[in-house]
Length: 633
Image 1 (cartoon, rainbow, N blue to C red):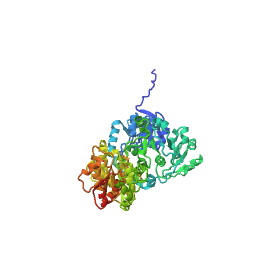
Image 2: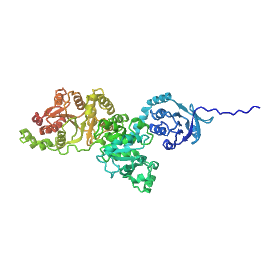
Image 3: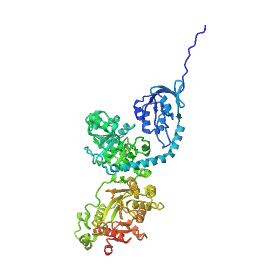
Image 4: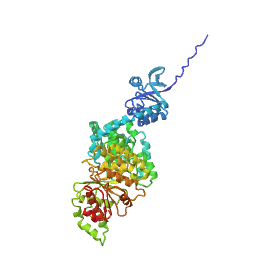
């Protein structure tokens, strides 16, 4: 008799796990367990979500949507692939319905089975196909940026008062002025970022502003002095003991209905300050910090790169970008702090690479935001009549010569009314004597003129090693302004850009959008920084020279470019300025006038008078030595 043989079941090929399904992705992530198959409905999976998924130990990710749609090269799929996670996309809505949460499944070559039963199929992504998708997506980037540009412009129109003037930003009781501030937001890598900041937190003891659930990462001691910024989504709120233990709470609903959020806070005894704006809570937190005039803002868990901005799927992305521009060099990313601390041990000032200029040009936004980093010092304050500069007040000459006595006695009368109705922009080159600049500004006002702004040319603009950067930015800005010659040499072109931005041959009453955009790029690129908020385009430009240059290419080019794009240009310097001597030797009749001796009361009176002369007669070299001739004009 033959005994029956036992059937040994064959092992089916593929990988096995439990399906975990949920929408949106951020709601699914906390439910994922090691060995699960994550089932998502997420077009263009971003890196932040991918990091969080990978951290849960899943073996595969199945996406109803394309992992890379072609709009831009998103980094999420590559992040998962690098973690050894199998990827399937494009299973569609119908396929998604068949992948029931909690069901056991087997994956093989893009097919998803329950045992031997085929549930649905998608596209299996390997490294080759993923690289091809990402390469194709680079070509779709321009159209995505156009939409980004449009959204940024629309948001700026809606939120101009908040972004440009901080109107509506609630004041804090927590003192932040002059202190470093760390703003933290939820991020899959936040623990590492906070670890990198450990030394900075210990040494600098900064104020802390936490956004939403990021407050859970704070210690009890940190919570007691922290400011919490919350959105309308109560699911992101930390536990009540954190809410009630914080120094203060700001509710920034981001344009969403906030009644339920206010009620939830009221139930635990928290009365928040309200920030009514369509900006996301992360952006609101940065503006709340910035409005209190901190010395520095460090962002941990915030978007920092263009790809970050494009990958961030939440609404209000344009506000994120505009907020970063508004803060300018006040904001530094947490990831940069350790490197800067190592290179500048014991230094309290952290330097930030000026990359925002390129981003400002890339999206072409209207950029009145340049006022965000100005120190609002009143230009020319404390200086009035000729011969009354701080230098002569602090160190009076016991035996003034006849010319100086004449200026002191008659300076006010000489200046009176000479610049009435004229707007003047002061452009100080690196190394310019600040006392002389202040005295010149005061005498312009004494002559009836209006100082529209004091502009400091930064060393980067004059540095020969940065010429390529200056050249690239000058070309882009010249094209954007539409009224500068792109065929000119580097510094001539940049001089035209500055002239067309802050003045012009026919200046309007207010800055137009191209000028505002150019001003932001110059500021954030650390090329030209304004003290005080510029009030409008100038009729006349006064350039104050500073430290002499062995190579005067930049000085000559800027002067030539400014002279070509302003109604009147005056270059002023100290008596011993070699740069001014070189400029005077150029055969540029009528392009600019010059004044030497501005360290003296004589030169400080001569400059406004020479400016007034430019309105009717161009050119001329004046100063302490030529003072009598100037007065006769």
